[in-house]
Length: 209
Picture 1: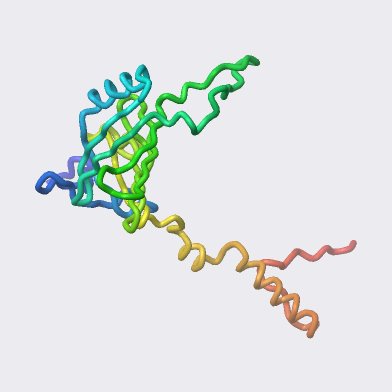
Picture 2: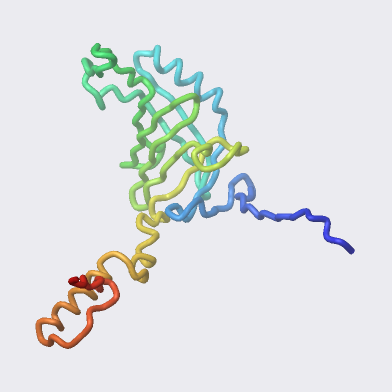
């Protein structure tokens, strides 16, 4: 049978599987080894945000499930992160800064917990700190996925690797390793004028004519 000339490529993508209302954990990238999708009504969250912007109290509630627990967040607009007269320079003009999308709060029922979130377009981004547990980071799913069927991801700081390439740097023959070999050769040259230099420091000899 003659080959058709077509190449078939099978790509396997691991997506988190939903189990009893929660999602299984999965690796997000080299730095984030454990994440879960979170879902909630983004339209309702956006409406709450719009009401909070107009309200003097500026309260907002957000509830979701992840990592086998509930996250009942109680938030209010953070009006102290910037001074009331904070301005920024735009086209040589000072203009006031809209900070109404920034919220602070806590996890209901969890003493000494604290939450810092920004609500933009009905999607939160920020972190949730739970004492004795860890800090959870929340980001838009579109930062990591192309057209995801969930809008946000959450991952614990305790499952992050902030330097995933340390072993590769340690094993690779790059960086200071070459300099170390040159230094060794220079030390030997100080003791003996017989040895040839290593490849890294060899240079073509100039020939006088």
